Length: 185
Ligand code: HEC
Image (cartoon, rainbow, N blue to C red):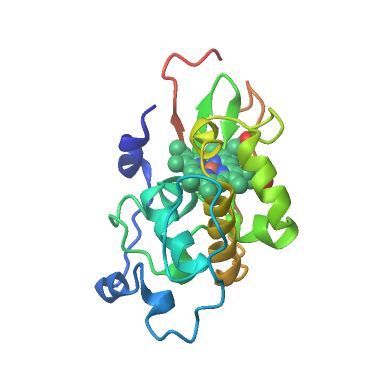
């Protein structure tokens, strides 16, 4: 997987340095936004003062932003929460065709929390394409997956026009990365 090569391909995006201040922890700084009490975990899980704060932390250390947030890699994580997880316009091309890190801000609007957990536990019923790390998310505890959902939902919708995935043999019109350089095309 050549995700580390991402920044060479991206359009340049400039983010204000001040955006760096709005990182993990902001959700609980006042205490008044502590909307999601932490339910009991069904296994190893992250502890935080709210589900949303746990979710923000998990999306960062779980690398969700790397593939679902425009500009995350080239800014080294200096994207304010309001702009995160709205999808990536750079495709990942391989024998499966071309897949895109979807707009999760849209996904959580149309999916229930239970369905979200189901998708991430089952590789979208076996339909999920690389390089989404389905093999990792299926090992996450339900509570952590729910925390991620609630955090992303708390960010609200953010349309971003992420391209639709393409079947093998179709040439993407925008930027893409070969995930398997000798891809069976
Ligand atoms: C290496 C890149 C990469 C990383 C890291 C990544 N994703 Fe993905 N994700 C993708 C791609 C590409 C797709 C589209 C897969 C497809 O088309 O089947 C996807 C799809 C998804 C979907 C399915 C959306 C739908 O259609 O219902 C969810 C949910 C999701 N990702 C959540 C996450 C979460 C949560 C994390 C962090 C724990 C994460 N992703 C990390 C690349 C990534």
